[in-house]
Length: 395
Ligand SMILES: Nc1nc2c(ncn2[C@@H]2O[C@H](COP(=O)(O)OP(=O)(O)OP(=O)(O)O)[C@@H](O)[C@H]2O)c(=O)[nH]1
Ligand SMILES: [Mg+2]
Image (cartoon, rainbow, N blue to C red; front, top):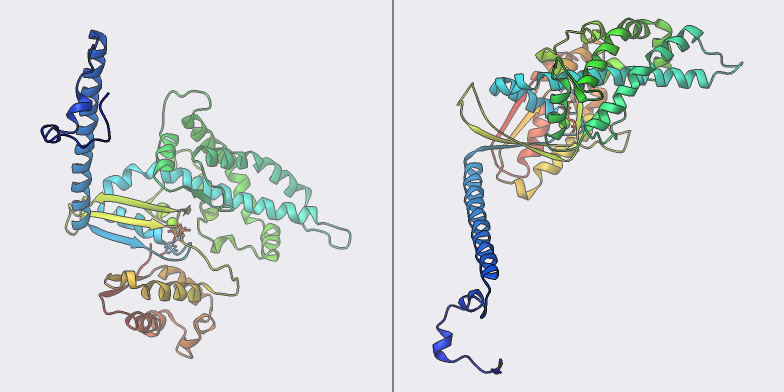
């Protein structure tokens, strides 16, 4: 038996070290030989596919290096995913069109979510009724709530189908990745034949039940007693995102197809991080490759902190990051239409931004006066010198 601890002889040391284990064993049978050769072929195939994967990865990284990369940041509900949606409408219209039916289901779910919220407030009011505190709700309200209850089951079943995380309260919340869109796409697709309990059948049922319930939903939402009960509970659905109750008749129609505007107003909460890669189909520099990363936003747990302060804090955190020292920033002052509506309703900006002071409380002053921008810019330039754009937008 050879001594394994003896140094190899010089003639052996020049051998390829792999050649020894790869040599056929002595007394190899024909079957063993075939198996060995097959294993070698398989190993070569795997090795080549790894090489091809490495080449693809290298190409992808090179493409990514040259592509436009955008990271969307902002607090929850600030409109990050809407910016992405707007972007796709403008620069990848064919893709946007292909997703229209996906958004139909999201909008239907938004509408059902609002109904669910109203019914929950009414239920609480009915449950807490006492002789000393009678509720203005009547047996007719009970009947209406009962007649609308089948709608709520759809929210659960569609949520399960798209693997909704369910943590968004009345808002659809999906896991990262496009999986939910693929499921909703098959869900919303029209089909002449469908299997029992298939997504298509369920989609058709949601549309039919919504159509059948439309008059009841409209009556519920337009009922002054219901509005009073909601207001007493400080529930203002019309100020919430994904609000479609004023459009019930149109959305619940059997032949409803969402408009671009509807799609922009739809609300679905992002969780985790999603990277979207696409090549622009039209517009400025068509053919440009983009990687846009959309992340879930967070909101301050402190209810006393208003959203402007929350955004400012987030902005400070971002601009002070040394990792982003050389990154160009685009600061979007979106939801300009909401600002206009709030100012028209008499909301005083200085209540939320004390440094706004006693300037005229009108839209041109708020948007044009650079107080907010300068505030942001000061915070911005205090840390680093880099490219900075700001835009006012409406989704
Ligand atoms: N009126 C109005 N609504 C807007 C505008 N931009 C966004 N929204 C609405 O605001 C809601 C929230 O927008 P999203 O894009 O889902 O917000 P997000 O930042 O992605 O939120 P998370 O995914 O929770 O982090 C949606 O219902 C949008 O339709 C705007 O300019 N005007
Ligand atoms: Mg989002």
